[in-house]
Length: 64
Image (cartoon, rainbow, N blue to C red; front, side):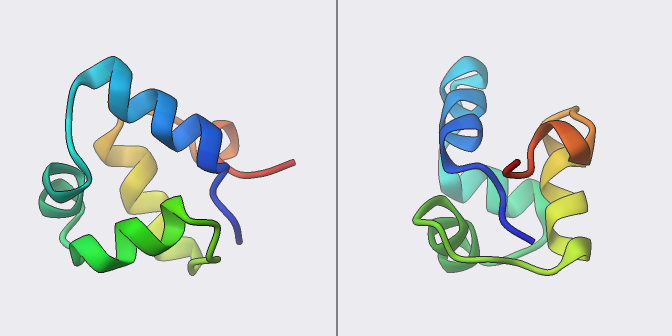
C-alpha cells in the first residue's frame, strides 16, 4: 500500500511533529517514515501504525 505523501506531510505539519517523532510513536525507524514520505510503499501493518499515531483512519491516509 502507499501512503499519500501530501497527506502525511500535511498531518505532520498540523501536529508540529517530525518524522523522527512519528517514527518513535509508531515503533518503526525514521528511515521507514522517510521512505514512505518519499513515495515508497509500506505494508498494511506499518500504514495502520502511522494512521493510529496520527489519530486518523487508515483509509484517510492512503493514496487513491
